[in-house]
Length: 196
Length: 225
Image 1: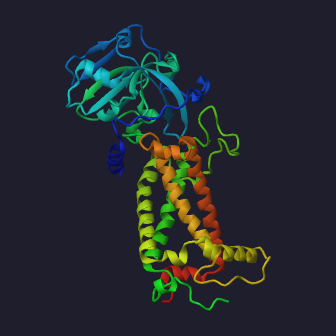
Image 2: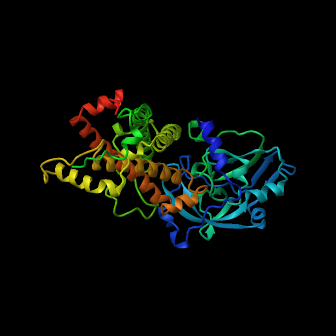
């Protein structure tokens, strides 16, 4: 049944359909925007943090935060949809994953993208269509300032087209892969596709 | 008293009071709707509040009250979601089948509430129930109040499906979601439909118990007209 639902979800998904931008007045106050991590303590990035990019790419390597900030910047204000049923609004600033895919020369055989973190191994994998949607970014900023540790500093995945648990925080690795590789919640029974 | 036979007779002549497709759709609905309600409340239990984060709606009196466990089904959030999004298809299929039969067979003529025909009868029946009136108004097949109740249940069913789609796909179907006033109000409508369907079911069961013959008719189909 989940497979059937995924087929329906992929059918209604459009790479060009954008989530509407709520007015700035709808931005959720910082204290009211939930955040969580699976580690016992809030994870902090090591001093030599860099994003590893690998898999089916022509130019694998590691990107520093500065290198990412030099890439074209995308800003978006969208509603967050949590699997639990709540919603919240924030503005996010970062690099489109589609721009990163071009930058590293991702192969067309890469139908999935895996995102790994330094939060006790939390990870998720996505279909390439959602990952390269114009509103899917690697965010280093939130609500006009840098990303704070509770929301996944220094870099997190953020997207308008997926449920919250798919949006990996505390990123360490992005891998362009030919197969899906599950995810932290997905392996425990949550729906893999998780589109909204 | 009206001597002329109701206009719907010509369409349903020779047909049982409850034709097989209607009985089938009726009985299939019950377990499916119970599973949908239980799994829906299990999903709701993950965040039993209404309104976006930081701006929960002030008018809702049960903010953060978790529905009791006996009302919930599916074990946990992920399990309830799997149940909800699986059974939903069968309930929609059953509903579409019912609506197609209702319109194609002409059954709607004796079942659907038509304001011009049924309003005064519904009011008279209501007056009878609340003891303002001593005798019930004449009824042909159904009285006006029955038609109003059954028709509103169909409307609740349609709205619960549409509002459900609006919160399932608030981005891909954002025009539908906007029609309900956005994600969080669509969630209110979705839960509100559940409450209305529950109230309908309570009324329905009470009246059926008071008129037990109708249960037999809904099983056997009843006599041919």
